[in-house]
Image 1 (cartoon, rainbow, N blue to C red):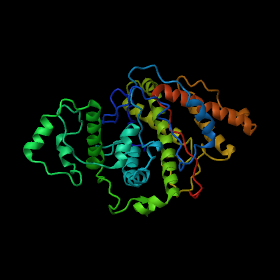
Image 2: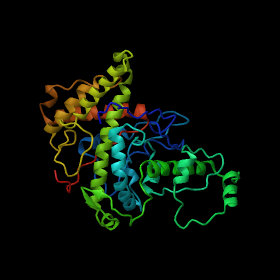
Image 3: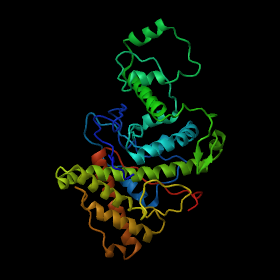
Image 4: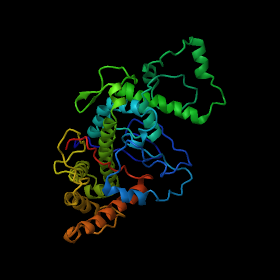
Length: 379
């Protein structure tokens, strides 16, 4: 992840959502951040115990008094996107998207591997995998190029349309076309271009081969339908990586002005400051650093261990880094916070709550919280 072209995603949500490849995502004005928080699903692993009490508190944070709230965007699919009757197909298709999304997330450079920020609804569209072309009404705000849109396949069993009729459907749309439907159509096409044309991921088909992989083993659609343990493992991994990326991106964003001031216009020095900070934060959960966590690995995450003495290491490291965060106002972690489990838990909960409140104040949503490791994960 520490490349010479390191550039964290821009969270200026007035122009959402990606680094250089933008996809329009909209949140209805009456949709609250509480509605966008994780909703319990019976097969989801529970939120880790260290965060559960904090989650109950921060859910009650009032929304911003903003007549036009910015979209709530995520760098990976939030786990509540995997719910409902289509959860099995979305899990299966995510396994196909997974290597491409993680590659873009960790590399953060080049013209193809660019991390994308989407709303929950847009991620659901991406996970459904319907990457097809559709007639575009005139005036629809599609960001993709005409050349890329033409590369998209037609939907299966699409009726044959003559050239004349096609021209009419594109250039002479019904004037009563709902604006919301037009935005969703544009979003759907842009998402199709991003994942199908840029990433090379084909439209979803339950029988498409080669099969996607999980823990280095191919997984068929039938296996996904039958194995709820696999579902839990997938969203656990996703929540862990998402939690780490939220934290890293937030730190890079909130420290931006300080990095620029320290660098005094020296771009190379500013990059060194950012990469050094990045390295320090990646050692908050493990000395080896890194963001990805493989289910088959033996890595122990200091922040979500069941042993409070182990978590103490990660909390102490994180606490020392938050001293530079404007508005955090957290008492430095010291030996007296380790005298007993009860004393430590109070400090841990206080730090996590302050982080969630500060994150919400800047992003308009809560950070993704880590889920409990499923018992089927062997470490």
